Image (cartoon, rainbow, N blue to C red):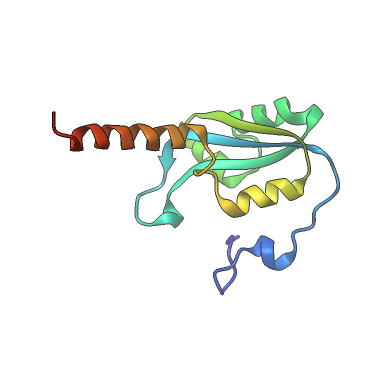
Length: 131
């Protein structure tokens, strides 16, 4: 199912995304290698953000690890043999927070990705400055 409607807007914005008032955790997975090619942003994936109830968090991450989670993107990573690390967990939040995070993408808040960008910027800066 596409994540955007015909106008290019998120389905989550247009549909209001039914948000139950359950309190749990929002977590973000960073995959160690990209899935897909580099032929545009639609074919390039590196993160997954999900929601779990507090008492189910460890089990849910385990389901992702084994590829038995029912999330097509995570299953595709599992089948490709690409492992992940859990880069963030927010406790005491609802699915509304998950929705908010998914609308804004994970790369900007991923410590692995931001660290790589900072490191790349430092390397470029040192190479640009003559000794």
